[in-house]
Image 1 (spheres, helix red, strand yellow):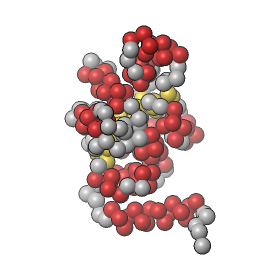
Image 2: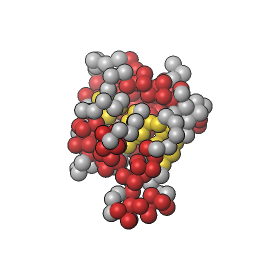
Image 3: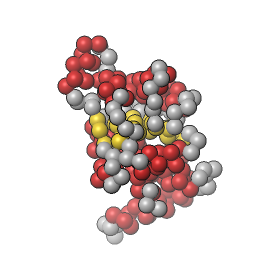
Image 4: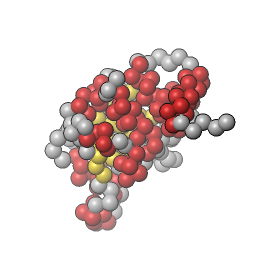
Length: 205
């Protein structure tokens, strides 16, 4: 007989994940996020690749409570984040990749739309959490903007791919920017969304 109840399916998935990953050297809040990443990817080996800067969960949680917006690099990631839940704290999920001014600037400069979207977002008022699930160029640009003196409150950085993904995340992990990231080439919008949502959902706990 197949499982049809979504809560039962999720609970069973989490029990199986616990069995596969065993005991990890991390905090309870970090473990919840790691399990969400594995749940989204069906890759237990990623447990060792999820990386947190110091007090990352606490910092991100405080930002959400303070009404921070979440800026995504692609619309797929925007669609995967629980916007209703974020709105309870006063924040919005925003993505500028398809904005006409971003398109125009990208065409004029021959730079990617992802880069131009980050440049547009960085000077928006208020606190911001950047969630990068697809484009390494977006993550590299945020790091460059930080080096130029722009304040970046937090980055969820899990771009995926063969060119620049691992390198951009490795560079992020060397910065002082508060972050949650994923070592190596793997990543993607689903994983970035799972990280954001894990923190959102656990604010009630």
